[in-house]
Image (cartoon, rainbow, N blue to C red; front, side, top):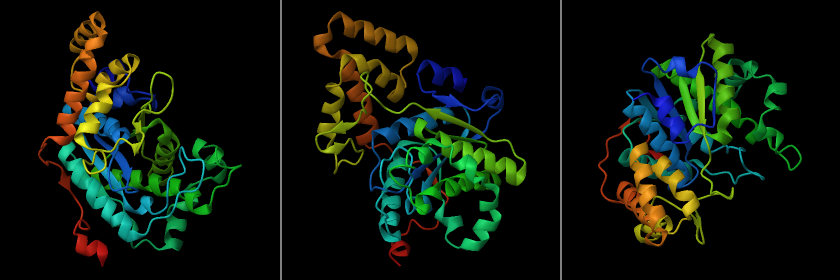
Length: 317
């Protein structure tokens, strides 16, 4: 399939860099980054993982980068205050858990940025990477501007350099030319594109998806107990199923587009059935069944892990 038209009708494109449609006429390598800041993924991650899966179905090679290094720093994007810093053991355990989830959900290569950052000397990083970052440009990024009044530590300010370097590193190691992420990641993605141009003269590309929100603009995937997790021990399959059965009629079409493989005609037909008798919640029940089966019912692991640190004994050491 042609990936951009597919993403467009599903409402999965928020921003793209210029020239992306032409770039994707040839099969490319695409990556999504997920920081290891929790021991489970949530439904916001699932939107992006399934979007990455759509690239794979269209014939592109796909990578998930687990952020042990970036997870120990903290992304200021979308946050009103400083994140609590995690130590290497906690981040390593989180990385192990979410890698298990990822490889059950999507067919991808899994890499970890601590593999190239762990032995990087601070002075070398400043000389090799930091010199290519104009501070005045960094200050224009939303993730920085939004925190200037409330406060932003140098640690979180440096996050952008690390993520940008990840993109450059994946270009060098895998020929990766496209990074995808949520709309709050646009500043980090474009920083990586700028860094590749300044360091190597390479043209890379970016695409963001809208954040998962309800029709009233509030964040979707929040429950009385917090986030809607993909880990059955944190959100039970029953509660997971019930969440989707109970979403508003105004939100169900978007969720069918974001989370299922149903095509446009199938979704239109399902919505027509639903609208003829909304009390039966036909569309919500189909969505709940599709999502719960995907997340909880024995999907085989088929990701390729290009990483040496998944041995927990190594993490604890």
